[in-house]
Length: 342
Image 1 (tube, helix red, strand yellow):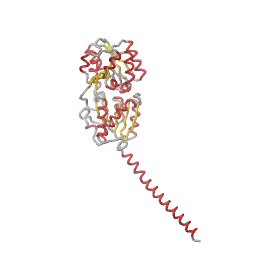
Image 2 (cartoon, one colour):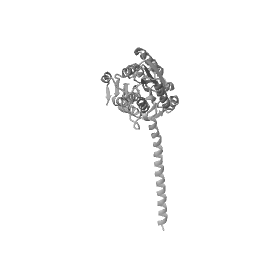
Image 3 (cartoon, rainbow, N blue to C red):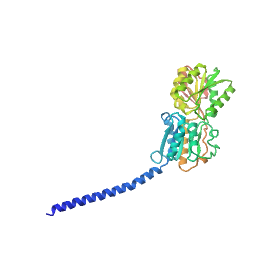
Image 4 (cartoon, helix red, strand yellow):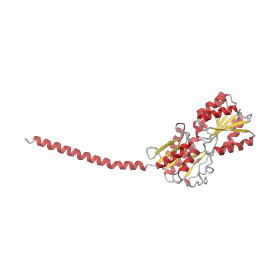
């Protein structure tokens, strides 16, 4: 007679125990949720503001990550990343910069030189910005001094514009009989005017005419090459620009098709099959950008971090490409090359 009531009592107590256990577990989980959220919120965020498309710049982003790692920051472990890509449409950059700021990023790393850096600087005077730039940051109004930048901006200045003169001289040596040399610039780039001034000044020194062509889309690049052929320019200088860097394959195809001697600012074009480049290494520059971003995350102020400037410029020649398109590289130029791709 006592078995049934005892069984019912046991079941009731069991249900009560399970309910208490569930509530205890629920309460414990609920208590940990805010802690997890606070931990995630406390993790600093690096905001990448990219002027180009993501895919062609994957290895440069990896170089930034390497620089961050060198000072102790690894994505998903103690630092988070936010990425915004304008896909070459520079007019989208201001809105993307504002979006990163709304995400309360700890530091902004512009990808793609002047367009992204100028947009970031215009959007904030407080959030640290660490750039990798081809133009003179003083001329762009980003900093007041290379040794003590002041403000919220610092980074790496590759001085791409300042060595346009040297590139033109090398191109003239490559194609000495060319009376007219074409120069391709991106009018959407903040440094386009200073690039043209430097090149025109250098052209007067060597006594050559300059045909300035503009392009900011793939279609416009193709139209520029049509104009180059129509005007019978004997060589081409491709100006330093993020969009142009992302279009290495297109340049290789067009220059090969028209057998145009061409010089680029970065070796990435030569690695893709372009003829010749003169400049500093992009990968190392982006790695140094990551190092500076990490130092900022550790508490150093951009105002106190000197602008990093290149100490070495490399001349790279793709001799395999020269043979394929029937261009003869002068022996004097080959002897001065830092690297010849056979």
